[in-house]
Image 1 (cartoon, rainbow, N blue to C red):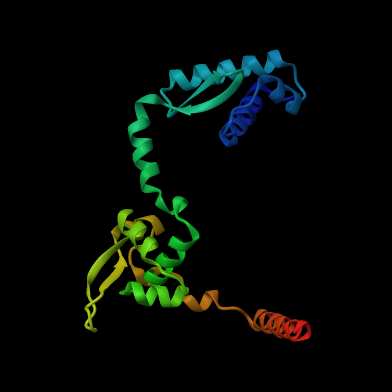
Image 2: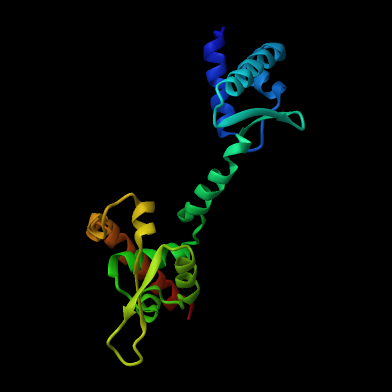
Length: 196
């Protein structure tokens, strides 16, 4: 049998990872306890959170118990979530950002050449989020805009300068992987020849 402190700790952990809330009955079934014991522990957690003016509250909505951020902190939570741009980036934007970070300053056409597709939309998204900045114009015909990472990128990556980025060679495939890739191309080529 769990002591009260352990039970409350378990309940807090479950509620923390639950994005839709959990019913008391589900908690009781999971922990093999009576619903009344769960309800009592949840009320204690709720009282403790309120009395300590914590950053989150325990509430029951539609017969499910959930943790909610403290209403007075919503402004700061919204600002934080707006700044957490990496979680909302598409794969295309992440690829574009990686190219700019490692090859800066870079033009849109250079980025598109590496990716093999037009990258205008991804560049616009990254500019709008403040992860990249315009860094002047290239000294080539037409003077295309050059892009590089900005301060917000460094903050999001938790690095002090671009030189702190992991070396690209660390991402290179080892010999075994290169051989597997080569072999898959050979097999695809031979299948294509057999079918034609």
